Length: 159
Image 1 (cartoon, one colour):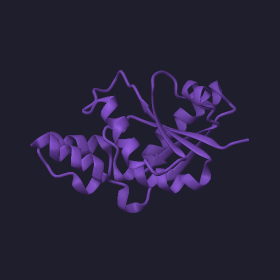
Image 2 (cartoon, rainbow, N blue to C red):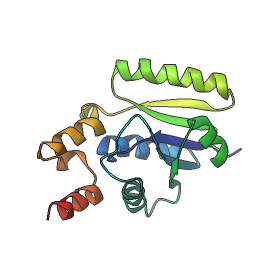
Image 3 (tube, one colour):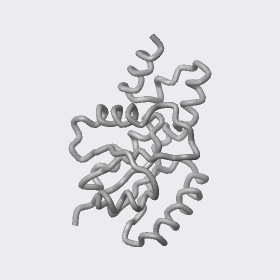
Image 4 (cartoon, rainbow, N blue to C red):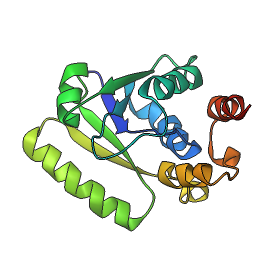
């Protein structure tokens, strides 16, 4: 059986913290779908198409990675792409408590899909898309938190 995982999130924008989790997970899975989820409770700063494009560009040479856009339950997306794992990144204990509740619910709905938690490296604990967006909205420099394709697009956007 192939080990297929879904890494769900809004990736608005994708950060070096996300990349840390993705790169360190690649040896665990045969295929990794990066699922850009539509969240009706959040207003995105960047379009789904832009986020999809960034992920495609960042992982252009990585055959194991495929970005997708999905709506609805994460476990339903897993079924559609035949994923038997959900990958989640953990920065703090509070992240774990929140993510464990979601993992427990997902396990209740789909016991065949297992959630895998990876803790981020210490240098990435403060990197969160929410914080990056806040700094961006106030004109701050976020280049140290973002992959090059995102930085390039932001510079083009400011011109």
